[in-house]
Image (tube, rainbow, N blue to C red; front, side, top):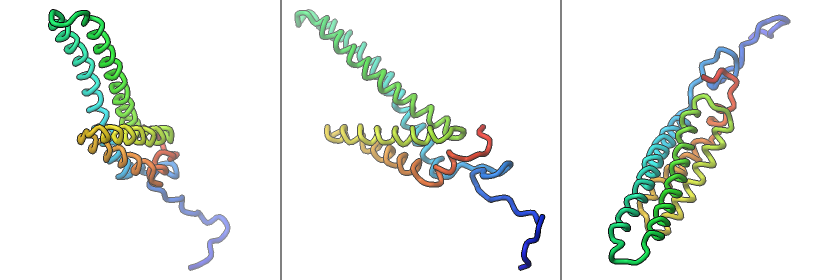
Amino acid sequence: MPQQGYGYPAAPPVSPYGGYPGAVATMPGGVKAGRVMLWILGVLQVLGGIIMMIAGGWIADRMAEESTEFNNTDGAATAVTGVFVVIGVFVLAFGVWAIVMAAKSASGGNGIRISAIVYGSLTTLGSLVNLLGANLFALVSLVLGILIIVFYAKSDAAAWFKRNSPRY
């Protein structure tokens, strides 16, 4: 192969994640899978949070109906409603966090990647705590949380979120 001389044009660097202007940027498969998992967990948590808040009101109504049997159940009904609403709002906010990260995974920067890893870590921790209480449904969120951590921590995910190409 002949030596390249002065002024000979060099080929631009090749990167599947937009390392040079005009490059085709395709999201890695791991990020796509993690994004789907974030959507699933987010939607389920939003629904769970809404159901918890509604259940708190329903339980308070049932306790008020049974107040003839017990004395001073108004305070207990209010406490139960408050606990359910606070936990429901927390679960709802956690679900919205997952949905925002899933939506921003296509165009977000490295902060979205780090946020997804933190979210996966907190989901994994919460699932382990729920497993101690013999909640077998926590296995699903445990597996999804671990997979989100793995998929967003890979080097191709880091290259995707640190790319220089336009973010749409």
